[in-house]
Length: 158
Image 1 (cartoon, rainbow, N blue to C red):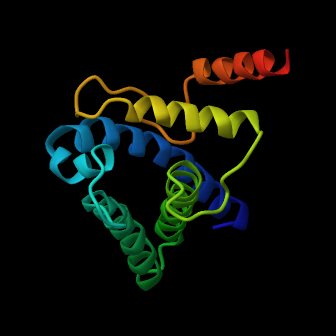
Image 2 (cartoon, helix red, strand yellow; image 1 turned 90 degrees about the vertical axis):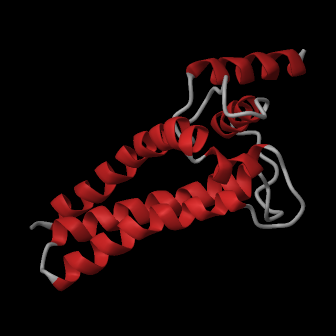
């Protein structure tokens, strides 16, 4: 397998994971596993949330792909595992550090895209129950949030 193919699989997996995360968030976390995700919408005391268990749920396939791929000489599986892990790192940085600010850095930005991501997530969290949710993705957001940020930027500059 060529290095370019290997990196291509990693990048394709990374972007595919946005769909997996969206689907899981909408139909699993806001579905039959709401009891695990609920404390993310209805904050309870403490630093950790039951919702943090989803990190493990997503880490297991990554770890298995990397480990079993290396053990069995299957570089495609290793690349898939790295793509999942890379998405997990991006999710942690964007969702936990940037959006929810569980760690107090990356607080301020004037970048249109990142402000729109924050706005989309805020709209998701305005719903405290599992029903009537919106904006279930993390990196790919509906263009209306970008338009809203552009409009807010124009009104602030006037």
